[in-house]
Length: 151
Image (tube, rainbow, N blue to C red; front, side):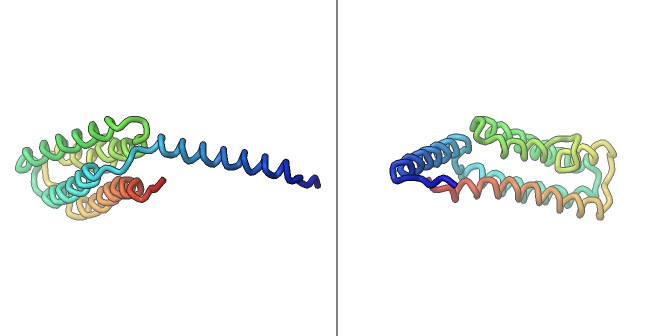
């Protein structure tokens, strides 16, 4: 095994420090910074969405305005997150999954409710609410992680 001489060791340390500095700098530019508006929006939409879901045992026609309002607010939140650029792609992807009407989260729940034109079963509402709440929690967790980054 070859040993590093003092000169080679200094060169290796310098290279290691340069690689670490580059990695830290790259990480700083690839993730969007913490945004309290994003955090507050996600928390408020979670509460309002879960509340709306509790009414889904009733026909959707009773709640048309609330459904439209939630969809509008979700769309605005997604647009806001997209506006932060590539460093926010993980958060954007979570919002897209949550909103997508072809998936099993909030977008799919609202689409099913409207498509069936009647109230949904309480068990279905309760189980889907757990998944939707978890999806919002993930979005909130992503934003909180940004707050802990200290460079």
